Length: 201
Image (cartoon, rainbow, N blue to C red; front, top):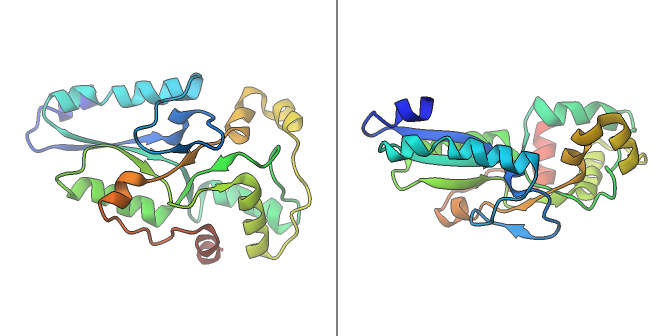
């Protein structure tokens, strides 16, 4: 209903927040904006969410869809991870080989402004930093920045026992690249994980 209403106003821009979960678990595959959606509950939910913007586009609005990765800022995911790592209780999840596509909060805000202000911007943009990492790499980097060991990996079966089906979100990953933003000259202030974490922590 909102998308339909927005589309009736000339010159309107609709920036919709979606998620990289649309791609599903894709292993080592590098995923640009042209990658097909995956299968399963989360990819289908994200696809339906994006499809809901179509009435606005049909009504003449310029629609931009941001597929957002793990956002690193002073709250959110990083705040929940920080405490166990500071206590020396951090570790990789499952095998640690799953990819984590992340973005600094400041870069997400800047990319949202880019979507609003650039008349040529429309369609899907991956809102992730240009240097994704595996869960094991993320774990080592976070532990190194905090000067703590990361000695306590969490086995996949333990996550499944504790979280049920929700564990798949932590055990699956996507190697997502922001190809469209980079092609349009968008400059990431925090392209690399270690510098981003050092600034935040």
